[in-house]
Image 1 (cartoon, rainbow, N blue to C red):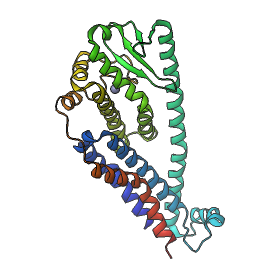
Image 2 (image 1 turned 90 degrees about the vertical axis):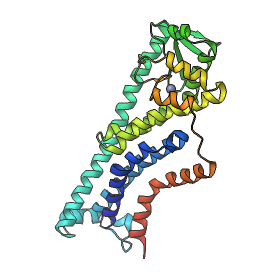
Image 3 (image 1 turned 120 degrees about the vertical axis):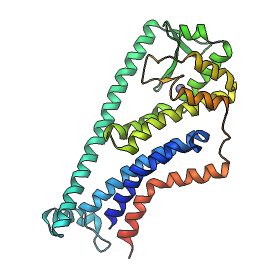
Image 4 (image 1 turned 180 degrees about the horizontal axis):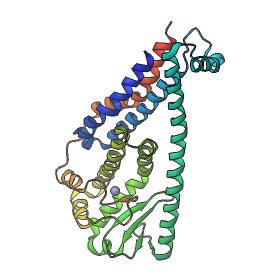
Length: 304
Ligand SMILES: [Zn+2]
């Protein structure tokens, strides 16, 4: 029963919630909250699946002393001591736990090594061709395309091409630089990586695929909000149009990234922000979502 409840919860979060959340109008009004929501959904799916697998493998109850007997109980279930259905469930649980414990560290390792290699190459390129401009707090690189982007890391670098400097007026450039600084200060590369990790470990799971795409979109809205607070919406809107060419680095946090059409609409007709009480209530609810599977197990297994 616990296992079915957990699987049902994971299935709802995997197949039903992402579509609704992706279409939710409030996300553009509170993009930071929406990012938390996507992370909460993704990690709640992961925790539910892991706990469902553990419950299927361990036929334990409050009467067992869990820490002492877990291993023996696992073996009993695998040997068929809890019946044929219990044996099948135990093997499925073992397979799922094995998959989780192999795929997640592998995906993390792949992302870390690939990201590190790309970043080193970017830094070498900046070192060779870039000119540090202290007045801009950015590195200028010669390039025929107009672009501005962030090379994230422990010491993030804002990069602007010579063509972008040529096309942007001072207020537009200031707005673009604020946008990139917001990516750096908000550690947006980590928010993107947290979503991308699950998608890389378990591709084609709708909740994870949606989360990666939506977090990539929402960090751009967060950075826009920061830039608008300092520079106003119009310079950034004009800069978006001026920079509307593909970024040379698809992994970079690009000034014209996300959904440029949506960003432009949002800058020209800003939606009203969510009221504070609604934001606080929603933040608490999303933060508690990954705890729900733990509560399900606790209530089912530990209740007297
Ligand atoms: Zn950006």
